[in-house]
Image (cartoon, rainbow, N blue to C red; front, side):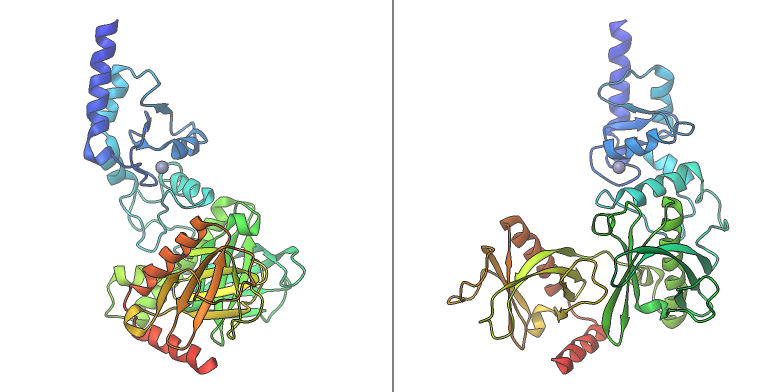
Amino acid sequence: MAGGHERRMKALKEVWRRAENSLCADCGKPDPDWASSTLGVFICLSCSGIHRNIPSISKVKSLKMDHWDDAQVQFLAKHGNAVTKATYEAHIPIYYYQPTYNDCQVLREQWIRAKYERKEFTEPGKQLPYSDGVKEGILWKRGRDNGQFLPRKFLLSEREGCLKYFTKQDAKEPKINVKIDVINATFQPAKIGNPNGLQITYLKDNKTRNIFVYHESGKEVVDWYNAIRSVQFHYLKVAFPIASDNEIKNRLTRNFLKEGYMEKTGPKQREAFKKRWFTLDHRRLMYFKDPLDAFAKGEVFVGSRENGYSVQKGLPSGTQGNFSWPYGLTIVTPDREYLFTCETETDQLDWITAFTSIINQAMTPQEYAIEAYFKFKS
Ligand SMILES: [Zn+2]
């Protein structure tokens, strides 16, 4: 019956148009055009694909192409993103990482499963696999020089405030023992070549060391990630008792602002440009021969505009043409100019945007200390 269909579609559109339903319930992407008829949430195409993998909990339909009956429309009207979030996101620990649409599949999938399948956040004070302050288990770790992944025992301890790993199952002494506040963890599936690939970096003598791990289970590797964030949160809470929870949350693991290949030249700017892998981790620009190198070949500190740092499109006039990529960029620091070239214009503009975002931020007292260390070293 055409009349009934039109009435239903009109009712569906009204619910769909509500402000609370204008972003995907799971990743925040604007203009979702799918919905779960059993959970009552509006979601994007990509999240709908994840929902399809948990059919006992979520049945997804296209808001544009599928048929909706009266009961389903009423269900959506009664629920929607705000009501559903109030149930499934009622008690998310503050340190728990909530992914966005830019994040990798494993983070987005486990977020959806944690919410709706495992119902991790529906009750307060639930004992969660990452909330104990201690986690022990095996992760596959990439060998430093041979690139081979081997199982290693990892131990995370809130009481000791550290992360350790052991080379042998029964080893008493850990191979590394790193303080939790110098650790960063970020998912890097493409770089590591595994959908559950996690990069853990830490500072040793103010130098960055990378280790690369994964676990076959997406849940397990995301549990490790949130366990690291949990331990960091509680450690920083004690170390900075006057900081607000939100200030502390912003100091937990961070994603890199940008990564990729550029060419660089040396301080005299007469040598040939060399292709290197660059990682911009907040104010640290590191470069590597290979993306999976354990140590950076070099690092550049990128301060703020007030302190004499700027980024410019192009290379200084008169730069010798010892480079093969056409899109130049120059970073000016109080001490010297750093010259880079990018393969594409998009890359060049992305790097300029990333550098500009940190140059425009004022430096914190800790960052002045890092800057002083970099000056002392060079
Ligand atoms: Zn989504």
